[in-house]
Length: 358
Image (cartoon, rainbow, N blue to C red):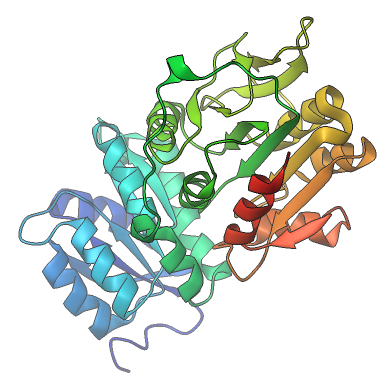
């Protein structure tokens, strides 16, 4: 049996980290599952590229800060030569780097705890779960990998906020996403024109310490003003809010009717997903009625199906990302199978549709 063959039916994993202790910790986590086989280890990007060709893994766990060749360079080359699902395992202090890696094609990330992977049951569970997720991906779609590299989308210079009149939104666009979502959302935001008639609300499944950095990165992507949401924030046209991690977000009509009011709450005990796409969608339907637009992007699970039902019942529009562009088609696929999708579109088509709302 060649190194690339591995044990039949098991996920083949390549571990890339310059710390021998971290590599061993990840190996121990993965070895706890009979569904996983570690087929190689590398201490830097150069060695990882060699191992990638030699072992042909199903998934790679990747550190970002490494000697000789860092994780970003590895991602650029790997996605061009041999697209493979990559899960970034990174520390909280590197959160801005995490989003750069997601834009280069990584499918997801796990926060590396300060006390180490061995000391966190949550981190150990997440590493294994997100590696096993690759079983549902098959070979990484080239279109999904290339769409993650946003170098092709030029940044726009946004006008100063002070020069903008506060315009009531004609539509409320609520976006829900999980695995693969940060890059997909960034691509849509980067493609939107300066003048749009909606307020954008985003529920992305993400740890709480990362959502502010995600909002700040989106804020520099295009013409919309985007921030992490806080309770009582006002939503006007050309503005966007990201739900804080570990919380849930709703929207309601403002008494003045000039703006929408954003509410941020702790999750309810029964909510399986946090932030909850269903909760955001249901409130959007109640607040905007036929001017509610729900967009379900890449991600595992079925978060968004019940909320999509509420939007359709209110006369609004539900858009599901197509299987051709979604890295993980679980969430949009669940909406499509439920018969709730008004339209099924690629990322570029979604951005074009949103730009046309007036």
